[in-house]
Length: 266
Ligand SMILES: [Zn+2]
Ligand SMILES: [Zn+2]
Image (tube, rainbow, N blue to C red; front, side):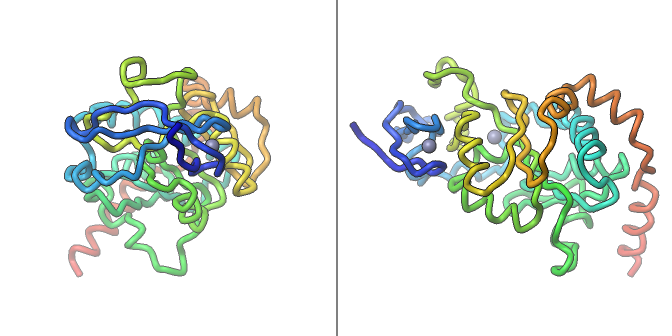
């Protein structure tokens, strides 16, 4: 059987399926016998896949931000220091950064592939190089795009000890193009598909604790938290109520407006 080494746990990963990516390349997907992580063969098609960093298929972008907003706020308010600075890694157009700043959190955007449309002046490139540590790093719909998740985690951990992220976990043992939409081979961008066990292996490699809703929202953190509290607060209705009650932070909107005005006038 054709095998490669699992990028997450370094044991052997077996050929799981073959399928057409970007409607033309026949690509092999390997699944780890130990942690269940699925990786494609060496992804030589990425340059083509990222001609548009955010594909026309990502119509869920705005709704996703809507769902995530109260969850991020509740997690920050419950477990971390909301007065510190935050970073959205792979932050795309900057929608989440702007919304979090509107809600009173000092948020910045990082994304080397995508133009910053909504969070100009609040990019990591606007911060001084000696001020690049963050209370929490968020990375939504990023991990499934990573060619080398371990190396990328090392980069993320330079920014923060705490990583809150989303990626869909494989819903069953035998996922394929027909029974799981998340492969999206038409875009060629989803090349790393996780299981809970593979996230646990990742946490183990870096000595972090993993908290997950078992589906799509996960937290890798140096801090030891109550699993029960996490599983409650990550529920949207609870998160919404919690953040509404406990978020007393004033919006950054007026302050940001004036600081951008000053920059433009200079
Ligand atoms: Zn593995
Ligand atoms: Zn994606």
